[in-house]
Image 1 (cartoon, rainbow, N blue to C red):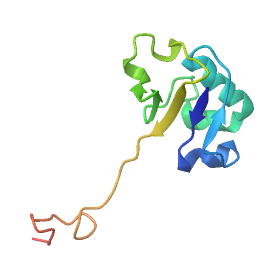
Image 2 (cartoon, rainbow, N blue to C red; image 1 turned 60 degrees about the horizontal axis):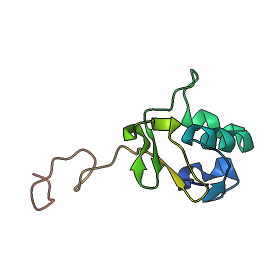
Image 3 (cartoon, rainbow, N blue to C red; image 1 turned 90 degrees about the vertical axis):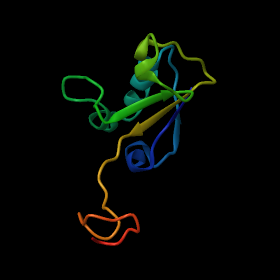
Image 4 (cartoon, rainbow, N blue to C red; image 1 turned 180 degrees about the vertical axis):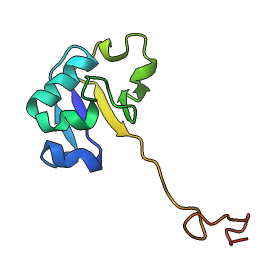
Length: 107
């Protein structure tokens, strides 16, 4: 199967956009990825082994959190697992923290 790697995390997988791995479940596939690229683990999992809250996994466009078997869901060689880190932050239009009106101008 193929695991798609987001741009900010590609540095941990040799700057590849996707990595091919073997596995029978989502969990097996991620474990295979981490066997190939052990430095990547701390960016996906907490020290106690839980998937970080800001990391989302999608199996063929389905959010793994909502699949009946979650990370135990079976996978095939033709499947794609996508890692999507949540990104927060930003600035309101008109400047850092400035309240904006409907026109985007400072009020």
